[in-house]
Length: 152
Image 1: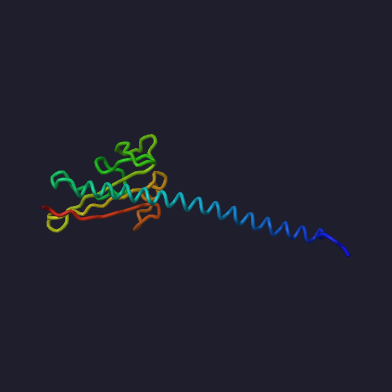
Image 2 (image 1 turned 90 degrees about the horizontal axis):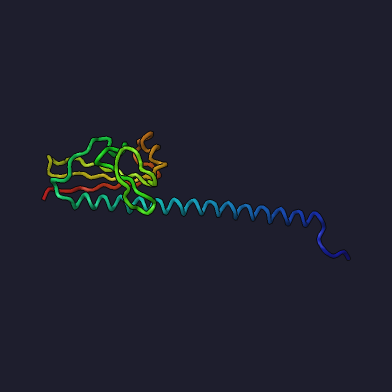
């Protein structure tokens, strides 16, 4: 009686192990991408929420209507840039060094001037060009929140 494995059996076993190893490696890569995207989405949601709360709690006289394209293009007074930890780096038309996110907002008068609609958009700097180039209803990389402020 012959003991051990034949060469063919060993090759088949190695092929199965290689395929399984490659599948696990690809799964790890996909998992890492999903985690990065989830972290980015969480951060943009928090940053948008913070700005929306600040604008809704501001005095009525401090809130002036914005240009209509303020959500799509960096407009002075309606944009700020943030680092990876959410710290504000300033505003302006071009991102300062170290900026990871761009946060833009619009303020629009509604209901015969007795209410304001406030919209806030936060997107990573790399994805901001896609939002400007294709201003569709909602970009995958973008977090957009809206709220209403009524005159007191």
